Image 1 (tube, rainbow, N blue to C red):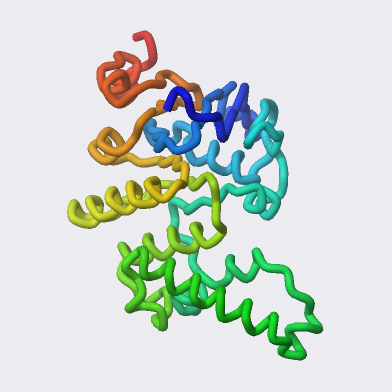
Image 2 (image 1 turned 135 degrees about the vertical axis):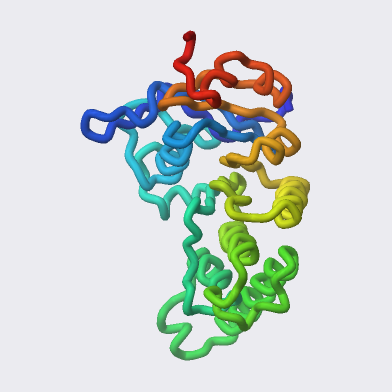
Length: 259
């Protein structure tokens, strides 16, 4: 990983909400092809970092660079077009639409066809629609959801809804995929499937950053792990480095840093 290029670079990132500092001078890098973990106790600022990177929040200060270009403060649609997609801690799907429609939506958003061409049913538009339907079915099949293409998203079990959200994120063709607690609420068998799925996505050339509370999953999955506590980065390194770091142990035991 040391020779791969830096895909995402965050420097001095700070986010204040009134008098509360949720993220404090946070810096880290994500290298192309890696699986990077962000962990920390509840309220550590992990999801806030994702929200800053993906444009849901504007930084109070600091920089966010993707492939060398500053993207901090851009609208989420702009961030997606740059090549960053995400899932959410609380699943966000179009519950009354089918699985196929959920995946088709971001695919359609990526395409540019004229309103007039669509109204007239031009051959080029029809070809595009067929190609997008094929792509959506391929994504569903890759995540084991092809049999549920016509099901409403709300009809799926929780674990399959998580997979559908990942499929929808992949439909944006991202270079960088951010996964916010992808195994939350899952049983051990489902978590194992999610680990295999993340490794498969990584093997297909996606760079991944994952927030997760399951330490076994993170330790067995990630190349590099960054640890946040009360908005501050307290450790960064390999799973072995993080596992044995005294500040990390203190944070998870509920003691103050340096106590």
